[in-house]
Amino acid sequence: MAFKPANNIQDLQYFGEFGGVNPSISDSSTYTFLSAKTMFDTFEGNADGCYLYSRHSSPSNLYLGEALAAMEGTETANVSASGMGAISPVLMQLCGAGEHIVSSRTIYGGTYAFLKNFIPRFKVSTSFVDITNLEAVEAAINKNTKVLYCESVSNPLLEVADIKGLAEIAKRHHLQLVVDNTFSPLSISPAQLGADIVIHSLTKFINGSSDTVGGVVCGTQEFINELRSVNDGASMLLGSTMDSLRAASVLKNLRTLHIRMQQHSHNANYLAEKFEHDGLKTVYPGLASHPSHQLFKSMMNEKYGYGGMLTIDVGSLDKANALMEMMQNENLGYLAVSLGFYKTLFSAPSSSTSSEISEEEQAEMGLSDGLIRFSIGLDADIERTYQVMRSCMEKLDIL
Ligand SMILES: *Cc1c(COP(=O)(O)O)cnc(C)c1O
Image 1 (spheres, helix red, strand yellow):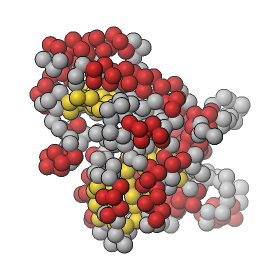
Image 2 (tube, protein in one colour):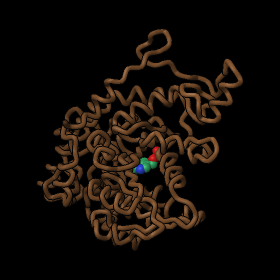
Image 3 (cartoon, helix red, strand yellow):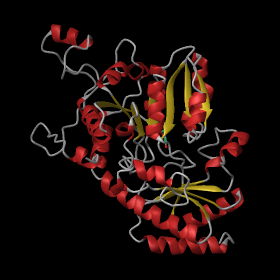
Image 4 (cartoon, helix red, strand yellow):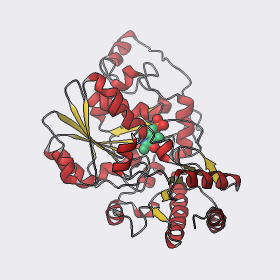
């Protein structure tokens, strides 16, 4: 039977303490115990349903975590203050001094900077590979490798990871396959395809209103308990905990994610087809010309489409900048990083979100100066949007 992530979210029922249709928000950092013995047991991790201190867990964070675990079909989940607040603790939990990570080379700039510049301080090394080349992935594994890391749909080049193929490699070499699914919530369900741990930046599509940062780690109860351990858990000890008030607001937004993703995908697909037809160099996983179109198709929960992200290459950074400024003036969207907003957002990754990656490495991975990354919004009339975009491109001799 097909996996139904939105049904899984919708079937969860939480009520507030007075029968409210939303769960009550836990507005406390600490919790009382009726007996000293229960407090001791809770510290030892043996008192289910008891709360200790909100850096460890809180009712509001658990509600949101359980909804996200239901979406990904994992045993449980742990929410965090940001996407990086999920990624960094997971990698530090899984790897110690002398150990090694094999990572896709086309990943979020912050994750790349963490792997390249930060975690080597702790003697953890990383090999960056072309994730679409499974032979290259396997060849990069050595006896110290612990983690295989990728994004289901990569930032910013929209490469698609063969999660089943990667999961087989990970199993064979006893690695943990960690997948950042930020670009494709609902569309792709990595844990159903064999990923061990699924991460999201909630900042993007899942929250969808560009009013907060947030993150989540979805995985087994055993791994989430390890992350939250008071003795040696990276999430507990690095302290990137989400606030309860924010967890409650993200949960409310999560309930409309299925509707939003369908509209983001519909609009992005519409524009991608038009741009490609007009002769623009367009990258969108929904286009038959995308090298991984069939692969995405074979992995997706069809209803949610190929996602809201697309790129076009307009030839030079000057042209890209001129086009983005003109589109902003025409009220087509905002010249801004991030993604998943109701309004279209655009930026030139080579000089912004991926500027952590050196020029040579950018060239090698095919990240050119004229590339514009779009997060397509929820526009009610996408044909009108297309017409105005087209006239901007004509004015600038891009079309
Ligand atoms: C934004 C983003 C992150 C980081 O998330 P924050 O919430 O900004 O910390 C990680 N991965 C991807 C793919 C992202 O787009």
